[in-house]
Length: 423
Ligand code: HEM
Image (cartoon, helix red, strand yellow):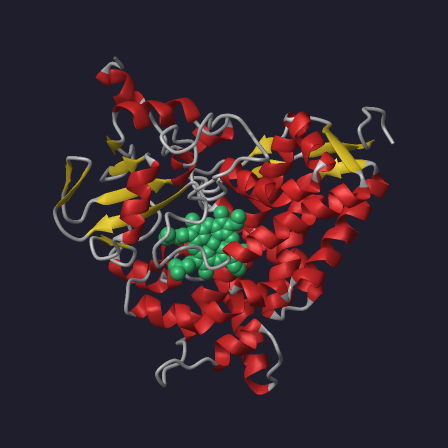
């Protein structure tokens, strides 16, 4: 029996904890002994309910009437109503506003539409892999994981390719806003209070400004891209307001970038640490689709999202009061022994693989799931086709964030296929 004081010592909210690695041992203790766990939040006024079992995450995600994404923020932070309003994007809305906003963009992310991005994605992936192979290695994050998704989303949005590095820089600064370290409020010429900006980051201001400028251009000079569609979109005679458009633009740049980049970095690290699984994949490329799902489960790039209870209710017999924070730890649900056999084993042939990496189903299920899958699959296919084998050249550096399971660096060396001899 686990002592109550051991459970009460668990701290899964502190960003610094994640610099050392995801606290899987603590998550397992919670799943087994206190799956609906009241977690105090040091330095803040209120705590939250930590939901760690897969089944509870799915049930909460589906019940948008009881668990709101709009009443408060979807991160753990407490925000004033005006701060919340200024930062609101698709992800922080409930029906019917959510339904209206989602309809404005969903057609750009259907499996059929996403298939149209395949060739462009393949070209980008091939170019990046050729470069790192020619260099004999380097930092996989900055050489491959970061540029691949940002170049893809930039081309979908219609942003000039030369601005992609600026988007990477801004996206990095967004995640820094979840580190618990206060950022320079005046960066990028920002004058808005940080609490009114997504991720408390001045980079959001820069993204808003950039998005506004490109939006103005597309209003007068429409093209076949997503920004044009957003600024001209109408649903029920209504179009996006300026702040809705800005927050949406910012969300797409962040969501289309940081998340997939983390999946690629963590997936590569898993393959380097489990070379036998990479052998299996190379011997049988038909396993690639299953490997993609396993990478997504293993990486759990977004570790949690939060809801707010709209009425008194209960989860697994634990009473939850109206207004309380309910935090769904996807990174725990993805390792729940009740759903996954041997969850701590990285298995490229895992089937079934009902991970909650893109959310626990329901109306907020990740809009970009097919795009993220496409990018990870193509990268694996191109690596295998090129016979590129990597090995770790140094220890990777983890991000200081309780939200994104990020790697800041992943130093690799290129070795010839199947051999450990430097190429
Ligand atoms: C491996 C990569 C990705 C992961 C792990 C991920 C994760 C998630 C999760 C967990 C949610 C659910 C939020 C909730 O339930 O409140 C979500 C929503 C969303 N994702 Fe992703 N995502 C990824 C890639 C992408 C990409 C490539 C895009 C698009 C460009 C994207 C755009 C969005 C948007 C717009 C939403 C909000 C959907 C809504 O509220 O209706 N994501 N994502």
